[in-house]
Image (cartoon, rainbow, N blue to C red; front, side):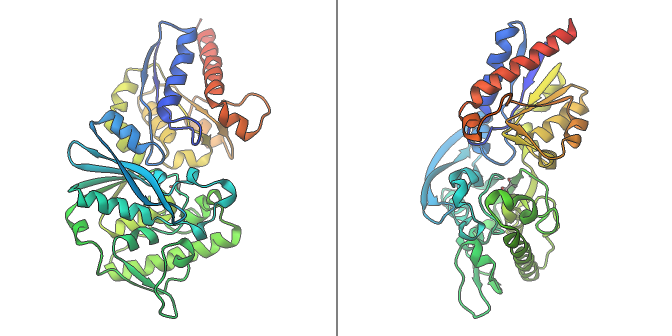
Length: 375
Ligand SMILES: O=C(O)[C@H](O)CO
């Protein structure tokens, strides 16, 4: 049996490579003959830099920049052989960098992303891949744009700071001091989702809650992002707010469009770089997965992309995730089977700590079932 293992990371527990290796070991423990191809995935979120570094030659560049809460953090980006910088928001202002109890869009910023872009420009990078997803922020790229030279003021004419709460007060902006080098480079944005900036499917409504936003904050941020959107559109004479992916990473997709970037599906970009289509075409079965699956999985996340490729090639696809929640009917329509790795009552902490063993056991269960159905 030829099996492709193409999981995303299990956020906070296993990288996509670790998850793929665990699945592989589980399959080999009951079927030594299986031909297994591992294709660790990312979709623009956590692990994007590592996955692209693993499938394309390049150098890992350590850097200190402003973290999600405004204090310095040590992180890294990559520079590929063709002078392309690969940067991800998840390791600059990521959700997993902030304890659940401290998550709050008011006190987070994307400023660090702008600093890393500037460092890559200083190094002479001529093109960029910027991964969006897994962010702790909902600032519409307000911090990022200020790091790149934008200035912003409130109703009283005072210059605003770099945090989400500052974006809520924006009245005027000035874009004329944006780093001119940005005009000469090509920026491709790998988005983990295709949501627009605002509205019922917008950044605040859909992803605000996981960043600690209350119901009141969701309404305020949706309104403020709409105001920021209008100001930028008026300044640049273009319409970005409704573009698919503008709402990725708390509206960073929108801010990057404003500096001339091109938005694309992160999973498709990474899948292409690792030759996933070819691997799936040869396979009898594909297994993908992620930390948590729900309807959002099909909004452009890696397992959603993998199942599209599998369905196109008529190869059965299984989703094996940390947890399954929400309305699963949409997932079942696409996948041949959807499973959680959790099989007995436990705490979230214990499940995350034992993700490796749980994933191993459930992969064995699934393979056992498939083998018995076949014989
Ligand atoms: O970072 C986020 O807001 C989500 O992953 C969607 O992009």
